[in-house]
Length: 368
Image (cartoon, rainbow, N blue to C red; front, side):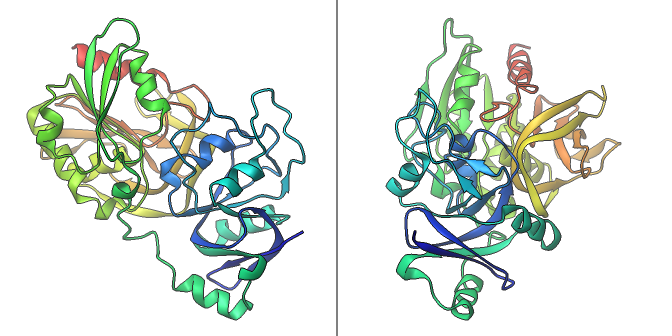
């Protein structure tokens, strides 16, 4: 077995064995509470520059296949598991998770007390981390210095690092009802597919696209995707969103797109202590008080008043959803314009399907 070392920026260390590629990696340490869907998690661009700790103790049971990835590659910077599966038992599996990680150069560590590590991150907050294995394992004091010197997530503008290089089109399934211009800030494969199933021809544009680029498609609606990084530094998509709002085109945003819409409405954003990452977050719709269990992946949130409408440059708006665990804003809605957003993932890949109806809401908004 190849020894491995995990080092947090506050000096806490965990020893284990190499899992995946052997070498070294750095990123922000975060934890994911999902018991399933590890392949979708690994390939979610929103995890760019993050080292993901899986709280479920047994990972890799179903191996890796060619059907479930949410993008063209694994995006996590590193991977931490307690007990990797020794076999892949799914008929869909093409290789083991260990082989998949190694093949894509993703450095991981296994044999770690992930419960202790998760409790540490909950108490101290998300922080920088490094994983070292094989010949790359340095003395602990040196490792702590190198982790401290690695880039932070706050202030990181990362959407342009994960976006598509060229525009592409996902055709509508069946009858074409709408044209949607989607701004790719780190979009997942399932998202345009969910819109396509509702008769949308989805034109996916790079994160560098301007508002005029989006409107040049004469879209029935504009979509703002999920993505990584600090929304406070992502100015281009904010300007594009403002242009779309000025034009009065229906707009729908999810996750990072919720934060971008918030900034376009002149709201602030802030970093959460340890974020929401998993498939079991209870979110309540403010008006109906209906609760959905939802899939999340975000470390930043919108700062907006809950329980009362507020003024924006585009008319009155309100917080439409809140997280029942901590009261974080989970959705925004303009009252005098056709625009709304949620902080969670209605495409449910992975996750429960409670919120998939939001794509129908977007379709009705475009139809109206």
